Image 1: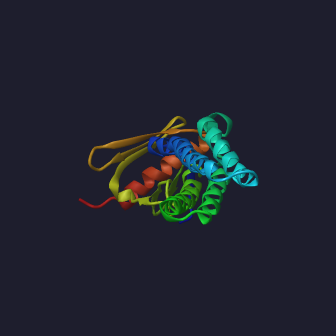
Image 2 (image 1 turned 90 degrees about the vertical axis):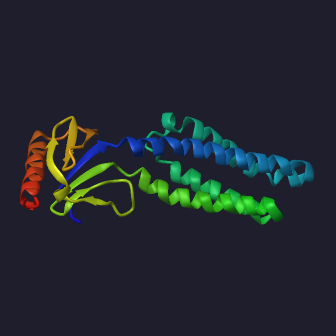
Length: 201
């Protein structure tokens, strides 16, 4: 689907999911920290030194999870931290047996899944206005809202508003300063598509 217009917007559901990534980092860090700490009494001398990298990863991830929104608001390093956690969990799992190993393997798989899903999650939230419909962000293959489900659209410098046929509407905050001509063109394009593809009564 080739986009005619891209409009950056704030979608609250995506923002909530983005905020949750820090919490998931903290939970994963505490789990790795707890497992690593439980192994210390079983090892001595150089054996304890082998646990240091896992403690460093756990503590680093913990700090990142707590302060991510402040120090990494664009989530530039989120994937790297998640990948490092997956590697640490996987390597530590190789040294364990039984439930401890299963738990670490489960966290390894979960970390890999989060790595890929969060890559999509942190992509720019752009609404795409095309002849096929309105492309919505938040998934690898953006869903498309057909023009036939809308009765009106208003594109302004501050908000994009979609009026549905069921008399409900969705209003999204525009997060970037757009060229006034682009706003006017996008608004006219959307209205034209609704008129063009309206279902005859």
